[in-house]
Every structure is written in C-alpha cells, then in structure tokens.
Length: 206
Image 1 (cartoon, rainbow, N blue to C red):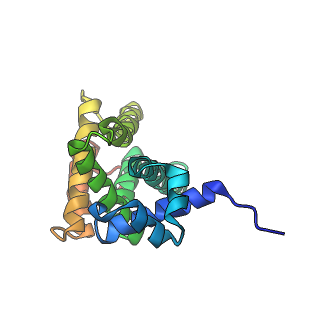
Image 2 (image 1 turned 60 degrees about the horizontal axis):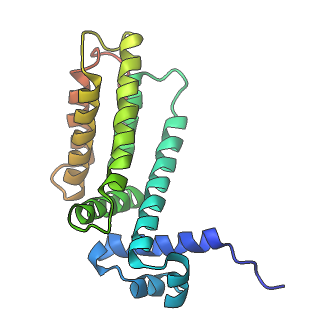
C-alpha cells in the first residue's frame, strides 16, 4: 500500500530545512527554491504547503519557538521537586545559552528574525516579541514566589527585575555566540546578578 503522507511531518521537515539554511549561510540566503532543495522536495510542494516565502518564514518562526519551549520545559521538568526559585531561574538562563548545536541554531535564527521584523513589514514585530514577553512574565512570577517563600527580601519591582534578567540573558547569549565570553564566564556574570536579588546561600546550581 502507498505510504500515507503525514502533512504535519512534511511541513516540519520543510521548516527544519529553512532553519538549517538560516543557521549555516544566513537568513538572507533563504528562498523557496533553496528550502525545497535542502528539504529534498519540489518547489511546487513547498508552495503548496506555505504559499509564499513570508508564510514559510512565519511558520518556521512558530516552529522554532515551539522547539525552544519544549527544550526548556523538559529542562525545568528534570529539576528536583523542591528546587529553589534561584536555581529555577538559573536553569532557564543556562538552557538559553548557545552551548550546543540546537541552542546555537535558535539564537542565530531568532536574532535574524528579530532584525528582519525591525526592517521588513512582512514580518510581525509582535510575533517576535511574544516569546520574550512570555518569558518576562514567567520570570517575574517566579521572583514574586521567591519573595513569598523568603528567598528574596525587601521591596522590589519584579517586572523591572525580570526585564533586566532577560536582557542580560540575551546579551550574554550573543557574547557567547561570537566568542566574547565563554559559557562559564557568562554563567558567572548572570549568577552575580542573581546574587544581588537573592540571599547569598540560596539555591546555587553547580
């Protein structure tokens, strides 16, 4: 019997082909034809599933962020049940660092998308900003929980703190990617920022 086509799987394969091109030779090299060649399918098939290059690019961004979310969720699920909030936030940061092929690909391609959204009206700034906005809310909620359980004292603006932490995470990720800092140096810098918020002996991650 002929193999039943899994359309979701086929769409994912095409998105993955785009990601490989963007991560190796740059997002400006992406065309419908180059993606078809990389995926080993016809140009007509890529057009069938995505219509236009903008549709393909936007679908791939959604796929990229879905994969990143799944990686982070798996990382956090593996933490001990009684993990401190400090260690929880530290784990989020470590997962975001571009230290393996998948995290490097995410950082490279996501940054490329952000640059496109800033200059090309075909790409939504709101869609690009949605992921970081969710992460800011997640970190702010964690910081509030840390204050409730005594890991953080004093009056703080956790919305401001979470924005600072996320901005630092993004900047250090780029610094690691271009070789300005090693991953260990980036972790030390981020830990020092956490030390300013948390009691010094709470929840260090080795």
